[in-house]
Length: 443
Ligand code: HEM
Image (cartoon, rainbow, N blue to C red):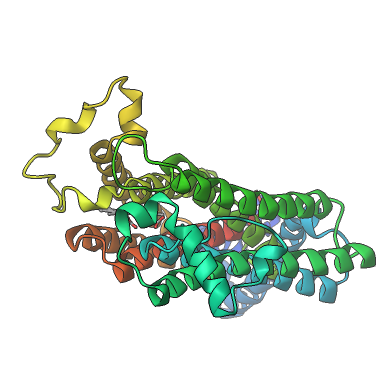
């Protein structure tokens, strides 16, 4: 019908034919311009002019209908294409099973966040070395009687943390730090159970796709590895300190423990979102800027991850207790002792000054990159959910930098430092969410 009107108006047949569904709005505008040109040439009282005046409103309505039809067609192709993206992970499992598996993965990833936060508070309250042995089954039973508590406290007294730091600690105070570490460890066991039991059921029922099965094995192994790594880290804090009086866990092991938790979280959240989120109704016309946006979002995610790891080095070396000024470090942009250790590479991991300097630099660079990403994303037509994700990501990057600076300026108070640590997980979450949304837009 629309083509008929245009034909009557004498518009170029090729233009009518080229009224493709790929960009209906632009095509309509182009046709309007062309029709006006023809009228200008032949006069509004000419036959064509009269036809135009009569049919233009009709054409516009048809164009609207056609446009929405076109968009719907594009949407359904999009949905098809997007579901192809998600299909490898989700497979052909029924939709109710997909939702259950997705929900389970999101719950597990949420529990990993809980473990990260609990672990951070345990470290900040100096509770992490209160349990001096590790046993998967026996370790579940805390001391109950007074004798059992006394025995546990005695064991703790043999280790450097009590000797050098907590030598005035009472049994009541010990119970408190013990329960902190105990709850962190029990939380880890709970993650194992909440993950493993449903995994077996879902596997049995065929609710896990072919691509999902090896991933489930990887997630399970990472959870187990996380427990072992945690104990390996604690062990380093129980050893007699070599160079100084303050016993603390190895910053390398702390960074590995945090890094592997964040990796597990990233993977689980990604799979969970892929299972749960409905596909986007974004026109395939999206934009040429999309590939660059995708690459930049990947880069931002990698930067957030790297900054978080460097933060673990700051925490492990208590480097937040030095140079408590911002932006300069003791009135200097580059402090004097930045390369005090030899060989040079050691400074990046073992010199608190360098480690703090790097973390500041990485933190502010990461936030700037997220800001630029936000600006760039404005040019790309995105689904409202993706828009919301990038907005949240940008706001969170600002909050995270502010929290980091405040943590530093106020000499690492527990509440601020714990919020800063949780903030890094929140920022990572927004980045994963945004990338997941971008993945759903067909290339
Ligand atoms: C995107 C930006 C940032 C991210 C993702 C980030 C992430 C982290 C993480 C994961 C930790 C380790 C926390 C722990 O294990 O307990 C940390 C520690 C720390 N960060 Fe950041 N950070 C960022 C920016 C900054 C900035 C700009 C500053 C200050 C200028 C800063 C100052 C600190 C300090 C002082 C600590 C040590 C806190 C402690 O001992 O618990 N951070 N950061």
